[in-house]
Image (tube, rainbow, N blue to C red; front, top):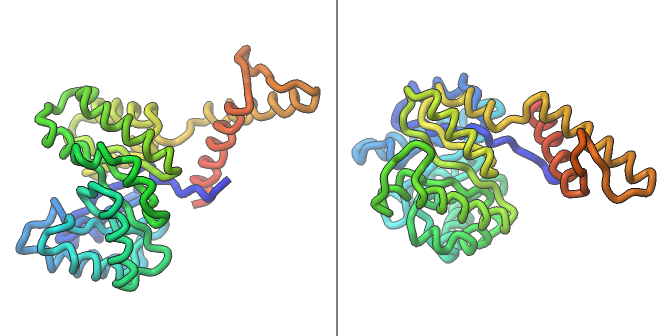
Length: 289
């Protein structure tokens, strides 16, 4: 099985806010997106760029995966953001509003021209109707693109929809469509944000929905969302016990010459074993951080 890196909780942190970047060192998120786009005012873009690059270079964020979100293609800040981020060498550079495979390849070329180290991946946001129509092409455009992040707020905005509990049908379609495309490419896909930071019950329900759909994790806008998100996307003790028992039952059946087994009165086939092994591998990855 390939190396597993947990990305249950992926927290946005405003790049112009030095206190927030300092606080992020103590937050138990799996990944941090140090943001230069939406959370940074135009007159603070350069300061934010300096802040996030210094944060990456500090090496003080422990197990947390660090991604720098640059400004989108075509903005006056994009090229300088990519050059600075590549030089800082984060785990990833996240680009918003990617809409084509050609853009992915151009972004990789720009990262390489700027000297991005091999460990710096490209992450891309899918958040426009055009991107949704080309999700499979985007996800499979280049091996350096490893993670797709859903921009659900922009999807609602650009389709003239409404934010509703449980998410509106267009958003659910966009999430499902993109998840299938990303899985076909063998990449990671992260669910979008939940806006009402005071609605704990609503957040828990949406995080659970994302896990049930098959997302690897969820992007977050407030530290209070990290713990419930980690819980939603982690296997429970019951999940782990079930996975172990299922594998043992199947192995016993194979040794007896059978192709299938039963566990807790349910049919067990090889595909169930693969899923059980994935759950245990993820639990091991969490335990070894």
